[in-house]
Structures are given as structure tokens and as C-alpha cells.
Image (cartoon, rainbow, N blue to C red; front, side, top):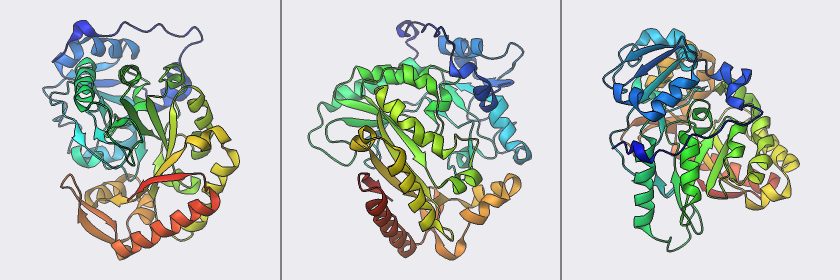
Length: 377
């Protein structure tokens, strides 16, 4: 499972230092306690991660990264919702390596190198799985994950025909349950996956992010990684995208990432319906058109993702961020729907959603006609 002998050599630190050592990075992650499976702690990647943390960090060994009573299902953690994400890290071994069909944003969902996040977006679906606390869990058997993906890519052969994911390459989402840009503050897992896809001519990696991490600019993806900056109207983001990079800074980073060798797309996500939402999105799309250079526009595409919510998450949010629920919880225009993963969620009623998508598409055509919509749901 581990294949530790195949671990890539340690990367030298840049002479000027890394962004992950900056005050801004430390505000995002100032790890003071680590819950770790013994095998994860003993692995080379686990030791590398621990070596980057403060020397007085508390280590608590656990049998499973999925079952930590002090974190998962402990409703007393609602009062510490953000602090736990800042100060707690979990190290585990990903024992089940599977690649799933997607067909929307990507052709495939790869086994992710992490689960959870240090940011606190009020609508995030990932906390629903663990309950009340979901700090970053890093999987230290990254070499096994990379080997699995390589085998899967080889088995597919060349992509036979274009689709909405990509005209030529099989696209693998590597960050379904986390944010790869934030993970890179404490781990080389993201770097290892980007390096691996650099050598796969029939495939490319893809991940969405709400965090601008300049360290990723040095990873030389050579066009084999698609970064998708998630954007929404700044007023909505200030209320809902807690601890993320401000939306204008995400947009401003796009040219730098393109020049560094990434394919740069955008996620218009999530679209939250509230009074004045059309004007807010029109202003954001106009901003994209005004500030992005032609080289970004020429290769850009976008996904539109309408808000999905969940009653247990609604209840949890009432405990730490009730103002967010003024926008997210709207029973008059929402309905219950079972998702592909069998979860029971709340989404906008079909007619409401259909009308909103049509309006947003019209806004894109009027304000940012260069922005190709890859898919919307």
C-alpha cells in the first residue's frame, strides 16, 4: 500500500522562502494539535508534515481518522467551529483507493489526497459527513494514490472524443473533498499530484479553490493541471466564504497562474438566490471582463453550480454563523432532493432553478461573452 521506496526526493526550499511560512499562511493554519493514525505518523510524508509544524504541537494517536470522538459528532465543537479548523490537523492513511466516474466537472474523481478544509464556507457539504468539526485530514500514502491514478490513466488509453470536460484529455478531479491550495501550506501532496500529471499526456488534473497560494506558481504543471477559481459576488462571499481569499484577489491571480503553466477556469459557485442577485452577478461578470487579459479569456471556461444545502448543516450553522442562513435557508423556494451520493439535500425547486440558470446564462452572454459555460446544474 505504501510504496515508500518510491517517494519523490525532498524539494529544496526556495531561497526567498515560501508563502506557507508567511503570516498570512499562519493565520489560516496554526496547527497546535494533530490527531494521527500510527502508520500515517510513521510514514515519510507524515514525518515531513510534522517537521513543518511548531515544535510544541500536541500529538494524539487514533485508530481511525474517521472516528475521533473529540471531533466528529461532538456538538460542543460548534462554538469552536473556526478555531478547530485553524489549530487541528488529522493525519491518516487512505485505505480504499477508487476512481469514480463523474462526467460533469471532470471525467473522473480521483482518490483525494485530503478531506476537510481550514476554510469555513457556510454552504460546504464536506462537514455533513463527519459532524460539527471537519479540519484538514491529510492522507500520507500519497505515493499509493499517485500509483493508483497512473494505472487508471494508462488503462483508459487516449480519449476517444471530445466532451464537456475537455476536448482531448481525460480530466481527473484531485480535490473533491478539500482545497488543494490550502493543503499545500502543510503538505507536498498537491505538488506530487501536479508533478505526476505533468508526465501523463492523455490526462490532466483539476481542482477548484477559493485560496490563492503563490507557492503553487513554482510547480511547473506544463498545462496538465486545470485550476478552477471559485467566484461569487463579493458581498455574498464576505458573508458565506469565511476565511477564503477575497474574490477580487482570486480573479487577479488568474493571469499569474496561466503564465505559470496552469489551465485557468472559473466556477460560478455557488449561485445563491436572494434579492438583487442578478445585479450582483452582472457586476461580477463585468469585473471579470474588465480586469482579465485576453490570454486568460481565450482559454477560460466556467461551471455554474447552484446552491445545495442540507438541514443538519443548517442547524450547525445556526450555532456559529446564523446570518449565513438568512441567505442559504429559503424553504419557500427550496425542495428536498436525494443526491447522486444518496445524501438527502435541499436544493432550489426545479422551476426556480431552471429560471435562474437561464437568467445567469443571459448575464454571461451580455457581460462576459468570451466565458464558455462547460456545464451548469
